[in-house]
Amino acid sequence: MKCGYTLEWLDALINVSLNPAKTKLDADAVAPGQIQYIKSKIEEEKIRHQSFLNNQVFDLLEENKIEVLIRQYYATLILLLDQAWHNEMNTLSRNPLFKEIHLSLIQSLEELILFIEVRFPAYLTTDQRASVTHLLAVKKELKILMTSTKPQLEKKINDKPLTDIVFTTLHTFLTKIKDSVPVALHDVLYIKNLVKKLKELSKQDEHTCNSASLYELLIYLNFNSPAYINYFTHTTTEKIVSYKTIPEQLETLLLLRKDFKQMNSKPGVALNIHKKNLRTIIGNWFDQEVQYLEKKQHLSVIPPQGSTEASKNKQEEPLKVLCVLSVDQMGLVLRAADESKIIMARSLNAVFKQIVPYLSTASKENISWDSMRSKSYAAEKRDKEIVIQKLEQMIKKVREY
Image 1 (cartoon, rainbow, N blue to C red):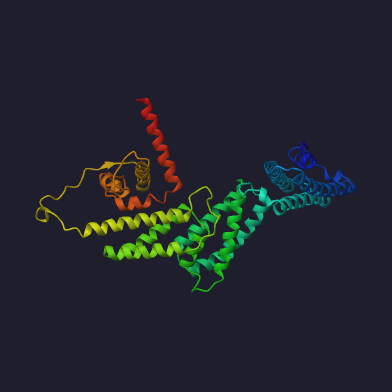
Image 2: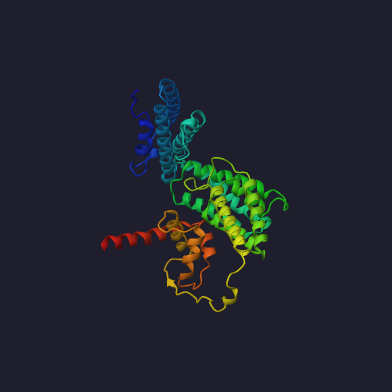
């Protein structure tokens, strides 16, 4: 069924008639009766569009056509609401009657958006853009959290690096709103859920509100921030290496892995929806660490051969190659080279063990191959960008040969 652009009247009102950038508004020249007529017309349009959508969904038999209609309508209403809000913010008029038009228009658009969200949620996706009014409501919640809940959590949890990671993420989200960066609906829903859970956590006593409870909350909500993943693996490694013997380290690691796998997680949610699941990344890291310690334990029980010649045949310190990449960035290169089969060895551990002793950086002469291997599982976005840039430079050089 062809119906044309049904939002034309609202579009013209918002983008032309009420847009200060396109129309020189003279509210005092508009009679009160005209203002009341426009408000009444806005209400009529709202009801007409609600009825139109209901009828279209019943008339269209093909699900894909219904889905396209609902998503197009929803996306257009979001854009119109954003423009209506900017019009209201930027208008120089102080005529209270004229301001009524802006407020009535914004309210009607919000009701239309809510109508679609309630009646036709199955046809929407969380990839769609959130409205500016929705973002402003979340911004208000976040500011309250920052001023009241944050101090309570920091005091009770007493783990500044961990709480800093969480609140830096929230601050980054606030910055997006401030800078008018488009934000997807799933990001808004995730932040709202995170804020709600943090508030609940802050109200608990010191026995239940601690770093362990925050760990569980972040894993439950799939807080797959590279900074948090790196912090989790780093603190876990510190617990393991605090034990002197390999059997003790392995036992501790197995217990920590068991505890991690028993933690609950909420399906379908993620801080970064386009990145790997937190449980997958950390689960793989645990598995790699277990394999490494098991091999290390196995080798430690094999009696040394030629022990009488050990001191005589002591290897000299290898000559090192200076690399401009950081330790984390070199780790990414070696891991990618192994997984893409550019270089091949018995295991990823063997790749790092055989190559890293011959590498150095401007700030570090002796690099721990084990540390580099561990860090390669929690790549920072900036490190990945630098590695890609250097690889592209290599590609350019190869093409010149």
